[in-house]
Amino acid sequence: MRQLLNIKSQGFTLLELITVMAIIGILASSIMVTLSVQKKRAVVGRVLTEMSAAMQNIYLCKSDDGTINAPNNTGGNNICSFGGVENANYGQWPDVSAATLGDGMNFVISRIGDFNSSTGWAYWATPTGTGVSGADTICCNSKSGKCGKVSSGGCNANTIIK
Image (cartoon, rainbow, N blue to C red; front, side, top):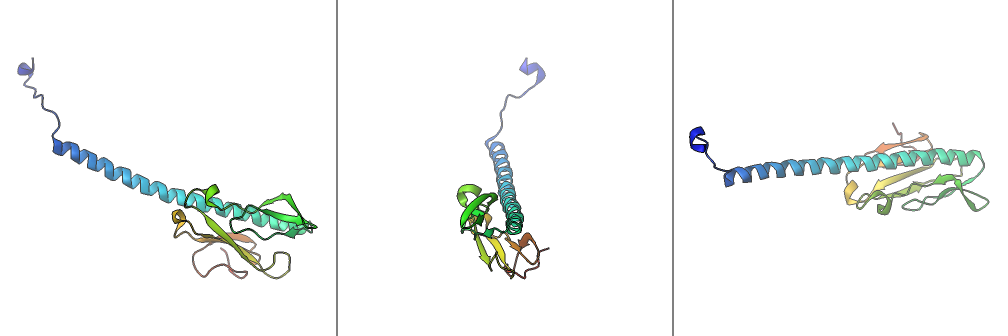
């Protein structure tokens, strides 16, 4: 039958197989790079959202005459207290540790000024993990009344957040 149809029963050559494997490898590596960039953006977006929620909780606590607690380096502690007793009803500082965000995706929270005074204050999350290297610092302050990303110049009470 094969002779009648003149079909060759030859398979793929080694060169063809290696070429296809190389193309698949290149495509797979480009997809992995894209996914890691998207993961970094997602983590930064999550931290920005949580830092913004903390800003709202600060104002709620202040309006109820509570005391604003300073954040720990990696967050997680209660934002508000009354008479020295912490109150979880006003939320917690965002947990920006690698245990929560993922290996290499950690930030460090810092602050300047006193949240409980009428002077200006600011708090920010600086990316310190290898997975978020090069990401912008997330800055929140009393002057702008909101949070945003700042790429240079740092964060302080007078930083204008757009």
